[in-house]
Image (cartoon, rainbow, N blue to C red; front, side, top):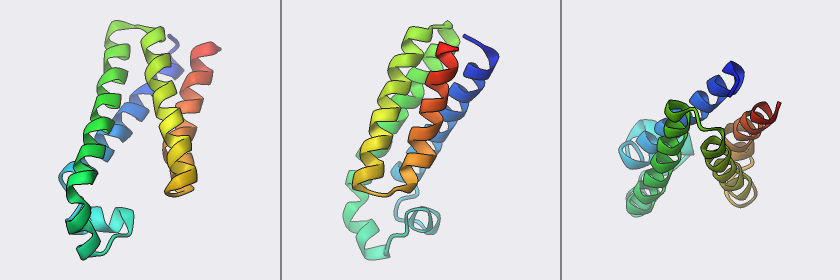
Length: 115
């Protein structure tokens, strides 16, 4: 695994830890509502769903950290692939911004693993 790939994988992992914090702990707080453009009412109603989504982002981050710690390109490819697919799905169903914030970094990481 190249240094460039490792750096991008670490960035993707950190992004997903950030998503976990936003979705699990800050969803109905001003910072979380601002990040996702939510009303207080909608944030309160969807808090449990967001926490579940945040937990999944934590699993993605954990897998990427595992890949880095174990120097396992195959594990990194799997988890970056999961992030890429989730980012593409989210980009087409929720917000185009997800394509750039989640899918693009994962795609860059995958390319760097193959180079």
